[in-house]
Length: 129
Image 1: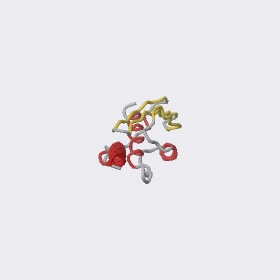
Image 2 (image 1 turned 90 degrees about the horizontal axis):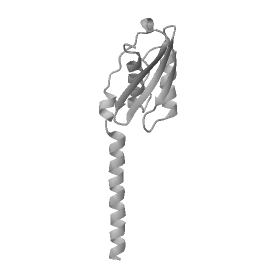
Image 3 (image 1 turned 180 degrees about the vertical axis):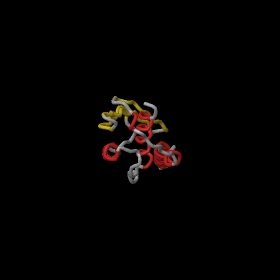
């Protein structure tokens, strides 16, 4: 009986430690990322081309390539995506940036830091080309 209780205690303790580690991974940098400010872009002087941009904050690391033609963003390719991504968030941000030709878009609900990570990578790509 004592051996069974020790096993149960060990399993429970292990699950608590795993839950704490996973919680840390998911929340580390959340507050800092939510407070990141996104600048603006000026495409009027941006020549045609493909521009690589990166952003990195804990699990929100990404690399994007922004394609510009006739001073307009025509497409954005995700080269390296954020950890634990949602395709709907990724595509939603890309679609809104292209439609608005601006980084001033609605932040995806429940994905503030992920949205800002994409916007910062786009800003990086187009900031000074």
